[in-house]
Amino acid sequence: MKPIYIEQSFEQDWVRMFQNIANLFFEETEMIRGEAGPAGEAIRVSFSWREEAGNLHGQADLRDEHGSFSAEYSEEAAHNGDPKAEKRQLKRVLSHVFLDVLEQSTGIVQPWGILTGMRPTKLYHKMRREGLTHEEISERLVTEYRIAPEKIELMKRIVERQLKMIPDLDRIGEEVSVYIGIPFCPTKCAYCTFPAYAIPRRGNRVQSFLDGLHVEIEEIGAWLKERGVKVTSVYFGGGTPTSIEAHEMDALYEKLFAFFPDIREVREITVEAGRPDTITPEKINVLKKWNIDRISVNPQSYTDETLKAIGRFHTVQETIDKFHLSRDMGMNNINMDLIIGLPNEGTEEFVHSLAETEKLQPESLTVHTLSFKRASEMTRNKKKYKVADRGTAVKMMNMAENWTAENGYVPYYLYRQKNILGNLENVGYSKPGEESIYNIVIMEEVQTIIGLGCGASSKFVHPQTGRITQFHNPKDPAAYILSYSESIDKKIEILDELFGEPVPAK
Ligand code: SF4
Image (cartoon, rainbow, N blue to C red; front, side, top):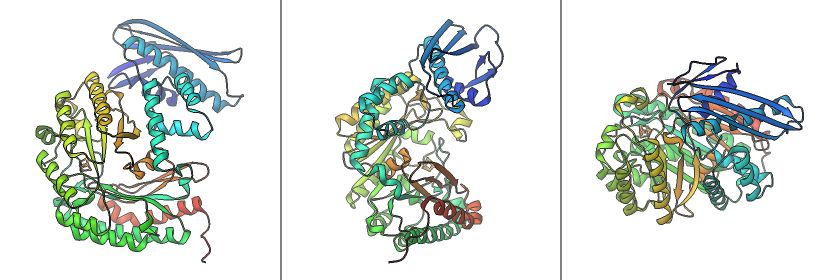
């Protein structure tokens, strides 16, 4: 834990902001405000600011074991006397100078600048919708956020791909997408914080959970039909949606097709079959019966020791076999996930994973960077797991970028997470035209996602204002069974507010 003393007594939201920036440089930090702090290893920072001649000036002075560093930054005051806008702008100004002194002291340059949020491309889209050209957006991203040119270029390419895939992206808020969470997995991966209950132990709960989910599908489907709200995409996630039995999957899709409006016109239905050990010919036949052809078969790594270390009890060979089985049986849009920075993995293992992926040529490949989520086994027992350092993680990310370009993939969505190795990002690549619509709409927050099932988060995006309201279904099947009925009522209440009165019958 790196202690950082801030001389001024800032309020908690400011301290959080400074900590978010400090965490880009150090694994864990402790912010101590209102104290000058002791000399030595601790970092001591002092801020000053003033408004003068229409400009807002900020300064940071930092002292630590490496020496004394100072940074200044100023920009035209644009708050027009509005205290909230003034605070926002001052926060940005002090973020600049804080980032600057930390870069000087550590020698680490942050390619994402002061941007600590999850969705960089959302910011790009916002400026685009305001009518700015790429050059103007670029200029603002450099000066206001200190984002590196290569990251701006990446954002531009992604935004262009998204608009190509969803030309009506700016109007898609009039429709909704649906996420359906199935909270079961064969075993729990060490880095996982998703609802993933082991099927054998919770087997008796599966049917009660599915009964609740059927009711959710019926009632939300009825609401969508009544209001004439179209569904853009449906995504089955979890857990692993293929960990339930083939006949249970069949019954679920039958319900979906019976109750959802114009289901055959839905642009995309995805079923995560992430764990290869859950894929069987019977289950693929069920997917085919309902014309569902976008699935994920997730290797994460092509090194058996790594799979064991992270608690996935299937082999690399099983991933390869199940990929071929799916392909041979007609699945023609398969996504695969790889994770950079899994325990004991360096560039050598990653080169191997890319070489194996090359033989399979999935339609899309999502390259994640390991993130230490608070509730995961890996974070709780961090010392047990040896993971790549920042430099190696960056190298692997560059390798993924080169490999995807050489193999005809284009980046189409990206997101960042807290506590992500090397402050990198997760990037979704696909063969052109095979981009996942659901991944785009959820990442850019351009439309409402209604979450059904366990651990499903609903994100209600107001079609006109973009204001977001969230609602979370419980993660635990036992709690879900007791509360799904209330959850349906709550979601319908919010949907009514967003979409207004029912369309009169024709
Ligand atoms: S397969 Fe996915 S949801 Fe299941 S335990 Fe692993 S990471 Fe979690």
